[in-house]
Length: 289
Image 1 (cartoon, one colour):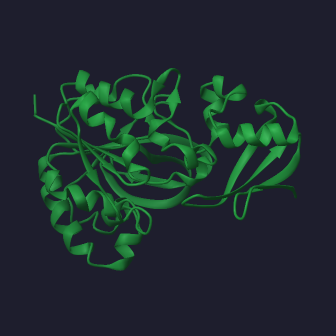
Image 2 (cartoon, rainbow, N blue to C red):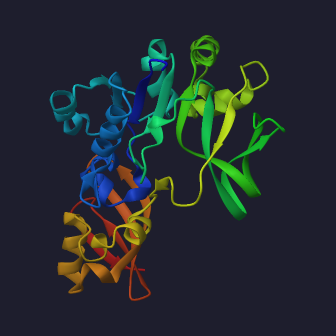
Image 3 (tube, helix red, strand yellow):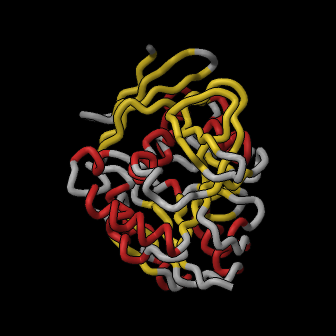
């Protein structure tokens, strides 16, 4: 078996997950009785992957206990607030080998890390109809030949990625050179991959069926998977809203971020088909819109 390591991206603010993400990093939320990132680390270790690096940024101190609990390494990305996930990957670029690159907020019902593939791959789910995701075109061998942002009836990028050592060596060189550009810093590492797809070793598509990779972009989506969040969002902000409006948590939904920066939180939500706005600037304001 090839020796493998893993990098878990956990630096971002996950602003679409307001208001809970303003109180707790998304990777540290509980889903069906387990902390998301802890479940992922356990699955990695069950698959024999013990060299695990977490790249943290937003509320970094809340992840520190994982070093002692699981023996993981923690790397700080202090550029998380102004740059995208390229700023996380560049900090661990020398660690790329036979490497899984993962997001801290994915939930895998079954252990996906037991796959002992020696070929690089990007995981994919199928979208029926229109989608704004990163959609893949593949050749007859299942190798990715093109990626477009948005598409229809397509397989799209989601979940974990595996770089083999050949791909890692080639991508490392390109990434280091590209990171000199401001445009690269503002984008995703996948954008670099797309630009240089013809110069890099081939990466395969790894197709999964619906439900085999779970990704929650909002509390509303999480509630569909973990129904305990219907009546208890674990959010002090939502509880504050409920006390103010004299409603139950189940009646508050449709959370949409307007601005989330530091302690300042501004988002919209619905109660019984009526829109409201929460604004924490200069004291807390809950306004009907």
